[in-house]
Length: 251
Length: 295
Image (cartoon, rainbow over the protein chains, first blue to last red):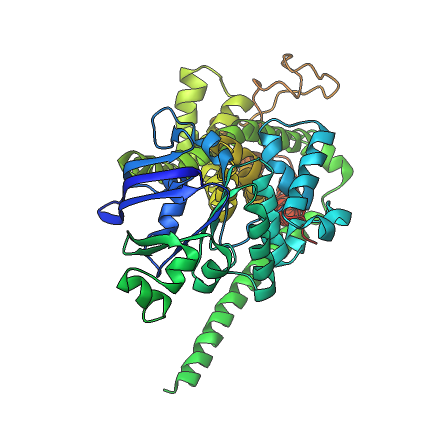
């Protein structure tokens, strides 16, 4: 499989605290990679370095390199906005804008310069279809995005991210605020999307990682303990700590 | 004592204090309005004041107050928005930001008479704007700016971080995120705050005594050329506002009905400010509903 994201010797500090220690990994394209590990292990931090959302936290310092495709994303000539267009993100809490369903999806393309109504219509429909939400909302696109259910809102957020045409979709515990049925829908959606997008997901839920992902990375205290095909990691882990974690002995 | 008894006593005291405040407010309002209301008529609201004879009105003063308010807001809102956006979104925590914040706090605690004297010194004399609406508007800006900055800052901070992140994560620049997601969501807070600040401006007298002046030239309400000295729209003419007029007739009014005029003018002033408050609440709620498209 082709590698899309290549992380080498990444150290990340929040002030004095080192949140990531010498992290190296290669994330293949058009597959789902899951980050698991106990709270505070650095999995979300790593995810947020991939679209540089950590830039907003004052006192963050980074050493090492991350390449997405051909670009060193922490290089001096990198335009963060272009990067974030390529590396979309879905958050833990569904966070649609207090606008209509249509305007939520059209927001990104509009501000990136798409003005023609029929082009926007097309993008909105395509994105909502990709997010498996079209059939549920196509008759009331003008309705407030806050009026639909939490699970639908989260799929709307996925549609909103897809509307700017990314290569990578980062999902930061995107189902942890949802009920089991909505969670299942998002998992199925992720399975469909991986044919076209590279998905990296952080999850608290080991079963989810086991169900959905192709590769799993196990983190502990800012270090990568084990990185393997999901099947292998869950059935036959190499490291004792991985085995302890997945068998529920801690975390 | 039992916790329940303590709880009851505390609740009782708080209720009594709240009741006292409401009574005080109701007393003030009804006193001013009852005393002045009978004097308010269309004629009173539109005719010019009389110095010695009975039957003077407050027309020019009312107009001056409203016009001055508009002028002040034209200057204050852009400055306040700019500074507020800077303080909330761009200022990095540190000495400079702390210093700016301290300056804003100090500015907001200045007595308005001091702001008025500052205006006399700087705007009226140094910049030679004279006793004019423009000098008054600048003085009121000094007086109002801290409030406006704080309101904007508060409004932007009330926008959930998730909303901001959602926009940034789509590759939208910080500035566009501010203008297209954060400001619209902050508008209800900013709007409400601005209207409340307007109420303060409308009722302000001390800062205007030495800046906008205590006289109003003969105004020709058919002349709408802003450069003409008799035009009501000329910002460089002296202009006595309603609040200043009340102060003046109360202290040196010689017309036989000075007391009634003061009472009527006070009632008009109080009712205007009160309606600003009500409009602010209503508009804030309506805009909030519109922007969050909730019913």
